[in-house]
Image 1 (cartoon, helix red, strand yellow):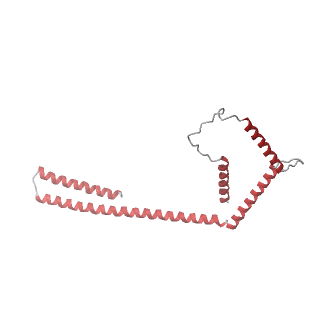
Image 2 (spheres, helix red, strand yellow):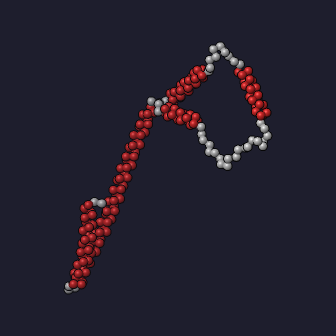
Image 3 (cartoon, one colour):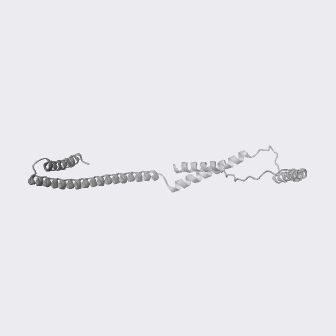
Length: 196
């Protein structure tokens, strides 16, 4: 609120208090004059009217101030939105969807090449000893069967082997760390590709 208007409103309030005080004091402590009482009532009505006008003026000024603040805020928001649009346009001027596609294809090609290199490096070098994969698998299955047969012959009756208790609660499933690491790597790669 404007300090001058506050002072005026305070003055009107003080004057109203003073006039009612004068009126009351005349009525109680001295000779009673009708004309003095009427003048005090007129002054009181005039002050009340001024107070109502000042209150209306203050309300109008407050409304105008809020409207100006809203207009300034809207102007700043619009200006900043314009800056943001220009900045985005400038950032995208150097980018072309075809260039992005080419870059992503280059990345995929390089990853494929790295995978092939990794596979080639990790293959054991037999120095001339090459084994037939089918023969190795057959021999492994044969060994597994022999071990199974041996274990079956050694098992005695169910009376001698105590069985464990079945758990009564369900165990929470936990995602594998490898899958989380792969997801983190993919997010990191996407962020990197998005920043180019």
